[in-house]
Image (cartoon, rainbow, N blue to C red; front, side, top):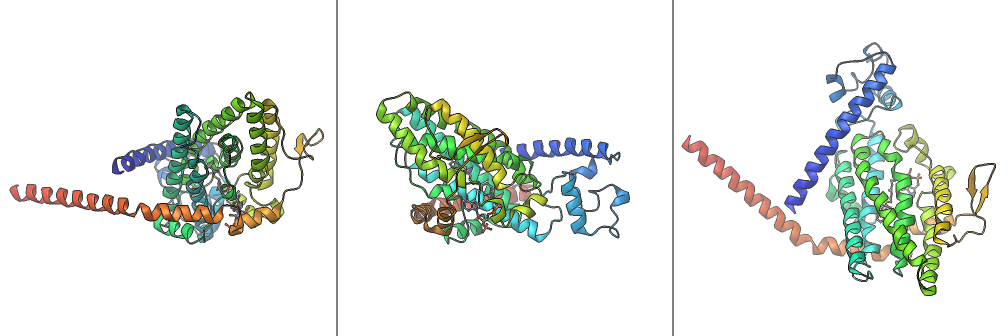
Length: 379
Ligand code: FAQ
């Protein structure tokens, strides 16, 4: 576990370095455009007073909040030690922790099928995919921790039912085709939502998302490959495929959240560049993409109103069942209770592993200290 943690942190450090370099290059371009290029040092840890051209950055003319927004407007990343409004911090903690919980709870519907996957190859791939989702959860918990909340607190909020996670993971996985539908539709929706987050204003979240998106893109293709294989199979396999698409399509469309006029957080999150596109914009992109891809499978989407609108250059689609969406979000979906119960049980069952790892780490630290003291005595 500690070795894994070590590998994980060295990867995070590498990602952070990459991000810092990107941040520096992006900032140089921006400042060049603005005709003002401060020295490199001022980019490394920009304080509220160094983040603007000096003549513009006098405390007298700008409040911290104004400077913060100016930095966002200039597409300069916010880093953990930078000043930020409390509401920005809270919004990020809410979104990143919900995102992390979604990845962790999202392991359950597919985890159910690892032992039932139809071949060793399929088992290996599914196992790797579910592990990836666990890894995404860990990056995201680590990113949220940079905002001053502990992982224990976040997990406590999930287990008590206070924190949300994506509605999609409260639907059951009833057939093997569901593994394909999750990859194609759920990971497909996740990528569309998450690629813009690679440009999110908060550095640690944006950087974590780069790797997550690469993996999600592989996941989507593996899901589509499962479905493509089924689409070329027996009539029973094709029937299983269509039935699975019918069940997963609408919940995937709902994943993007309430429509823009019913989305209380969107406006502010867009102003802060946490979100780059609205829920409805991303949903439309998803429908446009899926409506084309389903043709390759020779299947249909369960929406009689779906048709290409030449004038808009997009697909029109039918009414979303928002009542169902809010029921699931409130905890009354088909699997909400089961999912939480399973998570809490897994956490409790793993208590001895955490305790053993902590005891081992303490023992090792104590030995190291004793060794150092012995060397100091000899010297
Ligand atoms: N489910 O004002 P908005 C994945 C809540 S990861 C449940 O529009 P916002 C990978 C929302 O929290 C999937 N609740 O909120 C994978 C808010 O409630 P609050 C997760 C939802 O934050 C694949 C209220 O409704 N992805 O799939 C949902 O501006 C396969 C009002 O909504 C992310 O989390 C929902 N679907 O926009 C893993 C991406 N939608 O908190 C395993 C990051 C909305 O005020 C297997 N998150 N709500 O009490 C986001 O982009 C945003 O948070 C949105 C919501 C777009 C989800």
